[in-house]
Image 1: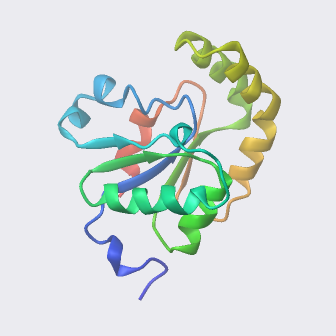
Image 2: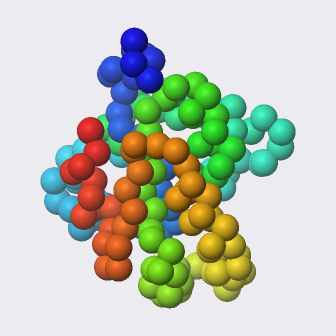
Image 3: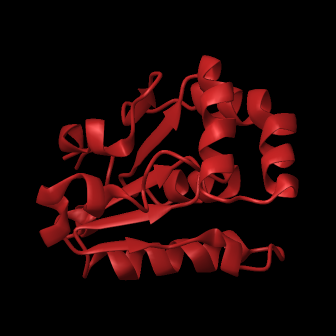
Length: 155
């Protein structure tokens, strides 16, 4: 048996996607994906009490059985839990130098000043954390790239 358990054979593709990569607009801007079943499992609906990531990952596993793609949080506790469970997932996030572009994306989509300031303040920490993640399933986006530009590489 390989790195990931056999229970993932009939699951959808799980994508841990950074905020602003174009998850919400994927079906609109990539017509092929309008026919796909996509579930965006936002972690913002979860209280971050101890153990929340286990419940979140239980939901990821359940939802992935019925959808082609499941978009999930890039929260480090979620990533660690998925790794512990040996669940295959992709991480899609921007390169560090894309900070100004992402600030503009957040502004354009109507995020609050508080939200934008959080990302500005923690940008380097978030990106460094993902850069340091040991995984063969990471894709970094360059300037002007969105999830729709790389999703066909995920299998």
